Amino acid sequence: GGSMPLNPFGEALVENNFIWTRDLCEADSDGDGLTNGEELGDPCCLWGESDEPSDYTKAFAATHPGFAEEASHAASYTRPETCEETAPSAKAVTKNQFNEGEVQKSVDIRIDQFALPDHRTTYVDIGFNWPDESEDIFHLVSAHVLIDQKKNLHHFLIRPCTEKFPELYNGKVVSKSMTASCDGFFGGWTPGASIVNTIPSVGMPIGRGAGVAALLINVHYDNPGLENGIVDSSGIRFFYTPTLRPQALQ
View 1 (spheres, helix red, strand yellow):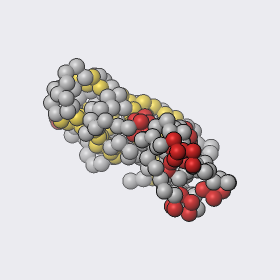
View 2 (cartoon, one colour; view 1 turned 60 degrees about the horizontal axis):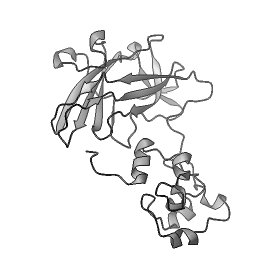
View 3 (spheres, one colour; view 1 turned 120 degrees about the horizontal axis):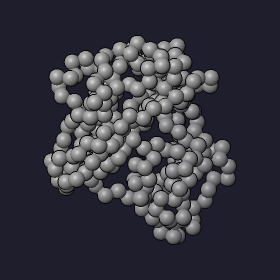
View 4 (tube, helix red, strand yellow; view 1 turned 180 degrees about the vertical axis):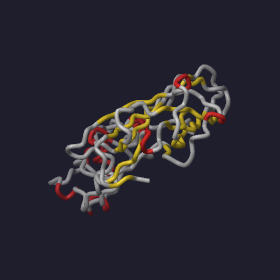
């Protein structure tokens, strides 16, 4: 439920939305004199999600980037002579990125200050209207969760809705009677997971012409301390384009 104390690398990974980036790779989270990449077998920060690791990385005896090693270990570490030997043996297909020439757009939706009850677990349905009506259909390229209350936000389940919610309820709790047009599965999120996964030829349709005028997000909150006064405004940042791709993710 996110209540376990994290080591410095764990905290940095959460801050980075569980994505291995050059900045995270080049950081020394535990302050032992070795970068996170050096401790994990990616000293030149060349590996990406789903890449096939190099023979160097496969054979490397990793150390923990969240717990400082003894000074003697850092002193004995030797970087490879060239970065070439650490490069992935095969690069994965690029995912969740705009293609060259695509119109690039983004929009944030946020929960409108939901006050968590002092219960161990809370499930609540939040309604969101798709805010861009400049086109009938767009293709989603990727989506990132915007986390407000990190220790309390557990996961999302997202359903598409063919009808909008009354504007008064946009970003707020909606009752079951208001969700008749919401059916099927649009996506989900847990820490470390992606809401949308697209490759260059594929987009995920959204917009009134795609039958997705709104989204119903079932939010799971965890409140292990049974605290009062916690208010959450987490949300999602969508990256999308009106430049429709050859294929649509169904």
